[in-house]
Amino acid sequence: MTTQKKTTRTATKNTATVAFSAEERAAMKEHAQELKTAARRGSRAAKADGEGDVLAKIAEMSENDRALAERIHALVKTSAPTLSPKLWYGMPAYAKDGKVVCFFQSAAKFKARYATLGFNDSANLDDGTLWPTAFALTKLTPAAESRIGELLARSAS
Image (cartoon, rainbow, N blue to C red; front, side, top):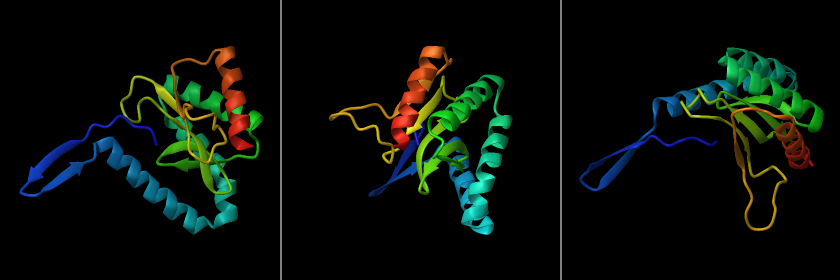
């Protein structure tokens, strides 16, 4: 998960404590709830309900984030149809064999300047010794959508 760290450190005698931001704590609580919900549903039902959960989360977003997330969702469905939608830390995500391949992080989630399309290590995007795993999104142009479609198809292969 790509986040902008806003952590604070406090020191006592020989130990240091790292406090998570309110947004990070909320994301962890959402993830715990997602795991409980998935366990109650069972694996087959969780897959079927994943798209509904993702669409409901997208519907909650601000107008700009929602527009971006809706396009990303549509691009995943057309470019990487083998990926299954699911929530991951309260974000729309897409998985293969239970492992999250990519996710959409709204700008509002962590009070960031831009939304993010991120890829985890299970994505097949390796390219030499250095490649990007997260992309800032402010607007989706036809060229950007084409590039994202290529990345999604490759990541799911």
